[in-house]
Length: 577
Ligand code: C2E
Ligand code: MG
Ligand code: MG
Image (cartoon, rainbow, N blue to C red; front, side):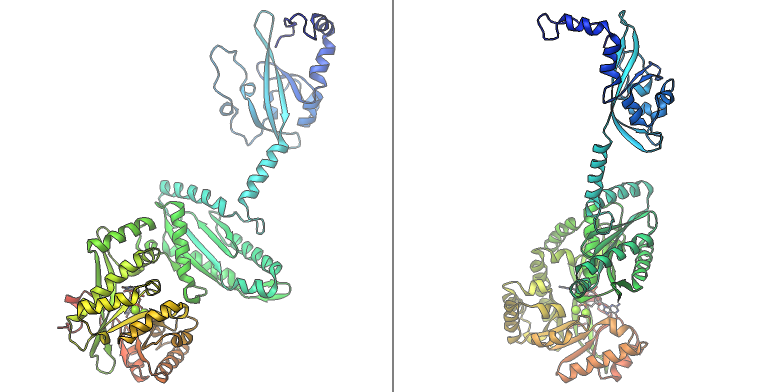
């Protein structure tokens, strides 16, 4: 810009006459373009000192003209902003050297006299003398604070849960990615605690949604205050929360955090003068090399297992987090599919004995995966992956055929137990598969027992029930596994033609030391006998447990005390013929 009149095309509306008239009174022009402009403007020396300011700039910055004139632009800069040298674009060669504050173009943050933040759009015009020499700069500062606030508010709202004020699921992905990047650099893994309130639905149903909302806010507050500064509590939706723990040492440290959260939620809540006692289930995982999504999936998978069979207040750690390796779930599925064809699966057999004289009655087949790089894997490390797709039937068919084939070579008195997943049982063609396995191996149907879980029996659809009755009609028997861990064990007994119940090892573990467990197991034993069922106690690890069970009328047993699961040739119990 130059204060001399620009050449005006002849005949244009503001012809040479009008310009001449205006320039004749430069003071009037200056007032019109500068002083009364609604935009903050300043004439600034090339060194960044303010020479003239307009009232709009004074209003914008909250300072009088006297306070501004003669001062360096530095006065207006925001103290928390990055150094102005970094804000400004690189200097273009051949252009006059200006103070860095004058080099900044576009949006920048300033500070008002009262300390509040101001966002402006900064533009400049270099004014030269008639000989071309730079003289000063006219700086324009347009207030964009409101727009900026609105934008920030939008972003904040998009990333915050409106009810609890906690960060939401959308913000989690970013934070998790950031934490993982950091952890890779620092070495310590990132831990996730996926938390789900137990029975929250019943609070909502009985006290109303408003009370439910209040409760969720109180839960959020407790989570917020009970995590360390380096941890973040996130609300994922409904009654699901997640704690992202940065820089945890190991699984034990993560468990400690989960225990603390559990205790924090233990104290009763108060909503509308009602006292509410809550519990939560938690899924834990740990990693540094995983993708955010797969880490989340792991934690969610662990939570699902914690809530299985109506579980409450349980904490489950993701299997790979326990074994130390991070395994991508998709990769696991692919590898597992390959494992079936490559012959990497093994069946281990654990003896089932008569408690009276430890006579061998049969074996339970338990699957293992001889993984090419990770070694021998227990079913907990990979069965979930099989449950997610068509692998279920492939894997199940392999187990059935292998187990029947193996058992056909044993002494004819020995039976074989095979675990069946509910998904596989529900698939069309299951009864045909059993028939084919028996026929191919020549195993007598009466020597095969299929183990299913309570929830399988409870939620079995009509088609499953039909398929099961076809199987049992041939002489194959059914066992209800992990008996007592579900919430409706007795109902499950009525839905299917159950032959045997297997008392879960969690009861057997403290049957000797815990009177309430002892009473419960006694009840289960009586129930079994009363219904004419066979009862097997699982997970007997020592002689005291064996004695107690024998004395209380249990006839059959399985557990490390009588033999661990092992491959057939090295079976610790009498080798079958
Ligand atoms: P399950 O059917 O209840 O099998 C018993 C589990 O308890 C086995 O774990 C066994 O190794 C373990 N166990 C036995 N005695 C003792 C003991 O004295 N102390 C302790 N602490 N544990 C004992 P495993 O082999 O890891 O199998 C876990 C579960 O995986 C099984 O529980 C079963 O539900 C499932 N599973 C195993 N093989 C198959 C299979 O071929 N197909 C299907 N669908 N599921 C299977
Ligand atoms: Mg079993
Ligand atoms: Mg069991």
